[in-house]
Amino acid sequence: MIEMSTLLAILLIAATTYLTRILGYVLLKNKTLTQRQRKIMDVVPGCVLISVIAPYFVRDNPADLIALALTLFAATRFGLLPTVAISMVSAAVLRTFLV
Image (cartoon, rainbow, N blue to C red):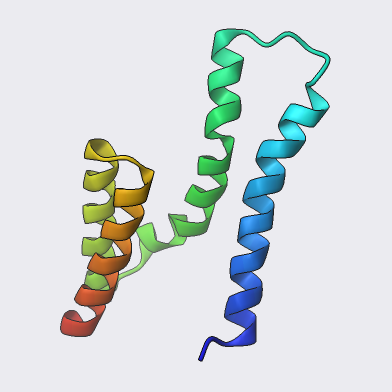
């Protein structure tokens, strides 16, 4: 069973990511964006997600650090969905066997 605090955190992160993307376009709807500015608008939600996982960079748990390295490697090779799947599976497996 999922704890209420975990569910709330997931919902707030999802809402923040969604609002970051939507609010940017709403606030800039009457502006003409350059190609570079449009690319920045496309990656802003990713920046929000990075801020969520950034604390794992400084942890001393070997399972989390290895899972993070695998996730970074997957992100350079695959799209978002396979990268998320690889990160979740690797974290679960490594936490099971290394902790």
